[in-house]
Structures are given as C-alpha cells and as structure tokens.
Amino acid sequence: MSGGNRKTQRIDKILVHLGYGSRSEIKRMVKQGSIMVNDTILKDSGLHVDPFNDTVEVDGKRIVYKEFIYIMLHKPQGVISATEDKREATVLDLLDSEHALFEPFPVGRLDKDTEGLLLLTNDGKFAHNLLSPRKHVPKTYEAKVDGDVGAEDVAKFALGVTLDDGYTTLPGELIVLSQEQVEDVLISSISLTIHEGKFHQVKRMFEAVGKKVVYLKRVQMGQLPLDPKLDIGKYRELTMDELSLLGKD
Image (cartoon, rainbow, N blue to C red):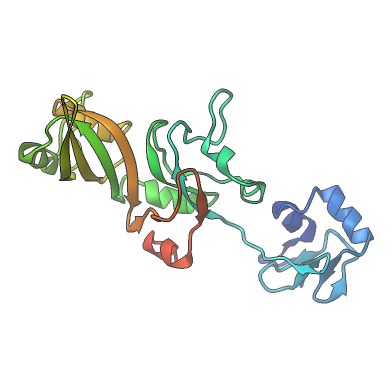
C-alpha cells in the first residue's frame, strides 16, 4: 500500500468501479468501519491501494478486482449490436448489472436478424486487435440459403466475389453442409469462413452469386468457437484458455 506509484489506485474509485456504490456511499461505509485493507479498518476513502496485491474486504467479504471484462454472448435475433439505442433493444440490455457496470461494448457487430457469437469487452486494445483489417481474423458462419449452392459457388467464393459496390472480397471458404426441399424451395445449409468484416458481407456475397441468405449464425471468431452449451440470449465470461485462443496474453 502506498500513495504514489503507478500500480495503486484510490480505494473509493476501485469500489465504485466494482459497483459497491457512489463515492459518497463508499465514504459513508468507511465511517461505519465496513471496509478493511490488509486486516486494518479503513479510515480514509481516498487511500491508494494496489488492487491486485492488497487485501480489501467489504462487510467481511474480500473483493476480487479486475479492470477488464471479456464476455461471450450468444446473440439472439431482434437485438442490435450497440451500446444504446432509443428504439431498439441492444446487446447490453441482456447483461446483469454486475457485468453492465464495466461498460463493455460489442467487438464488431452482428446484424439485427443474425444470431450467434458476439464478444463484449471494455478492453479497447483487445477489441482493436481483433477488428484490425491487417489481422484478417477469420469469422465462421452457418447459414441457410435460398437456392442451390454448389461447386461453382464454392469456386467463386474461393477466389473472392465482387459485391454490389464493386469491392472484391478476400477469398472465403464455403462448404455445403446439406440441402433440403422446403415446399417448392431448395434450401442449402452452408458454412462460410471469411477474413474481413464488410457491412452485411455474408448476405452480399450470396447476393453476388444470385442467392439469398434466409438465416445466419456466427459460430466462430478466430480460433474461438461459440460454446454449444450457451443458450440463445445467454452469456458468460471467457476463460483464460479462450482468451489465449484470441491472442490475449
């Protein structure tokens, strides 16, 4: 515990960040003797502590400090990938208050009608590394496509297709998983891995070959797959092993 080095922070700031109350509420808790630092009752709410090495207890319960949060969300359809919106439900509306207080934001986006893997974090550097065009982090989707997706489409996607605005995509890995006749329409179930994140890219790639995506789900980002046990609309924090799959030290 010290007052000046780079590792320390004011204890009231730490506790506010972790959701224990406002600064005035923390000050009142200090006066009540509810906070202890290294087994000593805290007298000064402005005291600097090292949150990773000093022991801080609130009402007899030790706090676990973390600066960043990393969340895997199984995004449902009908929810937008934004931090706030006046008319639509956002992915942040799916979080409990204990996670929302970290003020995470979506790493990239999924369209409103697309479901699947979406990462949320408050670690800007981590998000930037995953989204950087120079990284070409692969993203894998499963989709149902109205039409006969065949070998010709697989070959076109492998070369890159030209979108409606004239942009030619990087090569994509298209796999046809199955096909079924639904009434008088042939529906192709496919897997597609792309290496960039243009607006509505998967849908526009299929439009470029004369077909329409009717269902879309992201199932993997980089080396990280969507947890198959995670129900639609649910989320959990990433494990250390999963973070390492995304290049997080």
